[in-house]
Image (cartoon, rainbow, N blue to C red; front, side, top):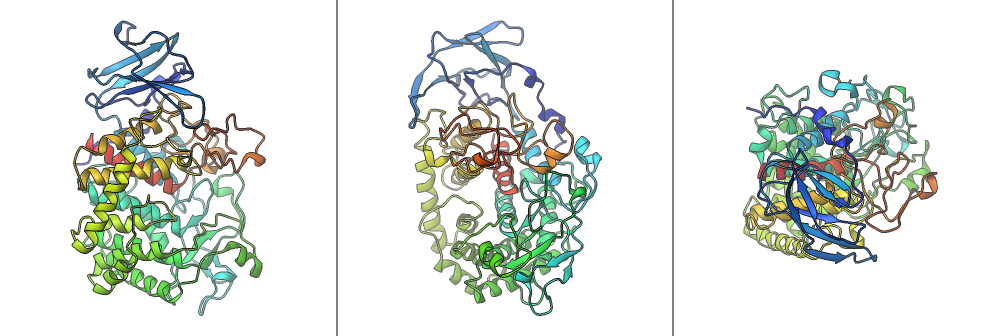
Length: 571
């Protein structure tokens, strides 16, 4: 039995109408009764205590500051209060110096937001109508059918001349734009399928209320299949190479999909996209084996993965360079590049997954040549960790022993930062933690590795620290944002996303993680709005134009969903 759906209307919490505190920082969704409950006082010199009141305003308990920690890059001092000893479930209010914030203590805190983070992928589907039955007021008609897509001159090959029309439907819109990119899609699916393999029972019961929810396949796998079907169309049937992306020559304006009219092209094959494709097709072929809803997929994906791997081996220098493409071909392309001029990590991941799928020892030999010397955070341009994590369940001594050691070293270095942290989390303690997509790539993704460590190294030793990163993400941070749209007291209202901008609805689509504070401020010259701070952890703007701090992306939501779903399963 799948868990009943928690309706998305719950995302807009009733407490969001309450006044927002300028100094109280906490997880706005709440705290589990028997887990640590750290609250932070910010922007104040603490005097007296913080009062916990019940729903009727009656005082329940008072708490005093237990520690004060100065920011490593500013003169700001944060003051930590420990409410862990208070375990009674209920809805409360924290009060301090005339300000207050709601505080919920209870179980199942992350279930609704976990569903929303996955449901966001349905809302980002391309080439199909988004139905009111599943999307409510965010329903929209079909856009970008992609049944007439052109071969860009950079992608021409024998049998597919420039200008040839192919069909390449389905898939997800990648980010704030309407294009589809193989490298980012592969990472997104690869990460979520990796988490799925760790907690399959959880996902077998999870109902995200999508059109496929009534079949025999877990909804997560159904959603991944929607994008996998598109990815299969991106492989040249003649030679096995994979096109880097499907795109318009330039970004569309902030209009709905049905109002977009530029031609769409598949652009240049690349070695990184092709290895990523091979990896995720092999991974999916293994996980969909004997699946009655998709009976032919495993054979198709296996063949596609092998052909792709062989093409990539034969074209090691086929890196995607938009500058070079634009110097040679027209139309020029000015959309997301996803440039990556190093493919050893993609080859390691692909060889690993093909070995796990086929058992062919040559793939293991290939993988062993590129075994990383450390555990690296999984991001779209550095996918070695996805290969490393895949070996953990094999107990293959040659690969397992160094990988488990690397995971322990990585995880121990992360959790060592918690006790001296201004916001009591492994994330947010170094300037380098902040940048483009930081909340996903430096907060959520490392926390997922902590959950791997909790399962494979020592149960109970690491998951609580992963939860602290979630606490930061969901409100216990310098700006007091719950950085997921539609959740908490204060969340982003104006993400850099064309769908949420052009749909005429005041509230953005719920369940989307924004990139977050980015001191690089690459967009500051393109906006009339100005950042209010240059501090690394406060360099954020909740405005539509801020693509550097307020965009959304499928890979970032994969990090969010992977973390929240796994925490939901544990706690």
